Amino acid sequence: MKVKLLTTISFLTYQLSISQTEKLLHGKVLSNNYPIKKVEVINKTAKTSTTTDYLGEFSILVKAKDSLLFFSKDYFFTRLKITPEDIAKNNLIVNMIIRPEELDEVVVTSIKLNPFKISQQDLDDIKLTKDALSLQKYTGVYNGTITNGADFGRMGTGLINLFKKDKDKELKKKTEQTVFKKLVTASIPSTFFTKDLKLPPEEVELFLDFCDADPKSKNLLENNNVLTTMDFLYAKNEMFKKIKMEPKN
Image (cartoon, rainbow, N blue to C red; front, side, top):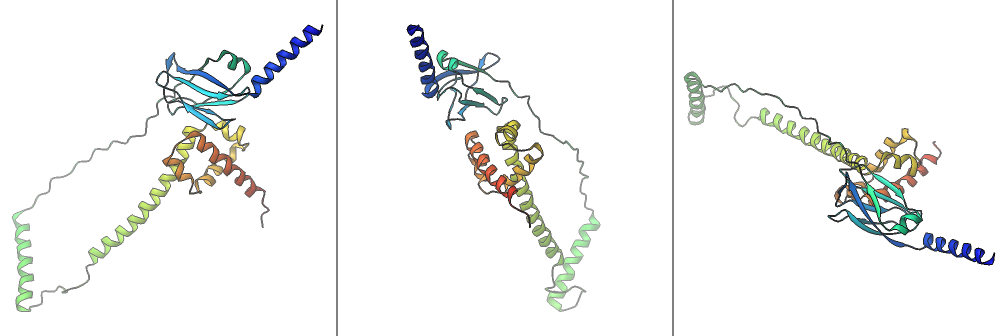
């Protein structure tokens, strides 16, 4: 009886030590039995990450019940919870499903340009205009034009360019916002917002607009990293909830 009790205690102690001590877990990421390189392997629990090599293999420190995330832009997001059995086997095989290729909308238009023709009469009219300007310059004879008058054509062009610059700035700003949302949509699964951040589905779009208003979101476009993006979303979620709880005047 004592022997059985000691055996049971030893087994439980072993299991507990495995669950509380980090172990170096080896694994391989595949898709249709082919290895996938440069997959981001993230230990969400320990906030550490690594990437797969050209053979699809990786090594990362884990404990039992740690949550591992596998991300590659060409494959669907994968999440696994580590078990004591995974640690004991030390040969984790992860299968990822490739995303269907998305084609951007392309609009093809056919533009026909009419040939530009100039007649002899047009050339004569141009010469006549030049001669009239020369006559006013050297004889002082008024030909109906205003010397040094305002060039309304040039002024109009300037105004058009001014409005165009404002429109280009607005378009650039909207493009940056669209790029940020595309980045989050491509790198973060939709379940992350409802399960991890506990956001109602109808508030996800509003939350993304709230995040996009933060200038720090632009840094994510320059340094695209899933772990960094998740940390940013976690921090913004706390602020978002506080604002929602503030009493309205």
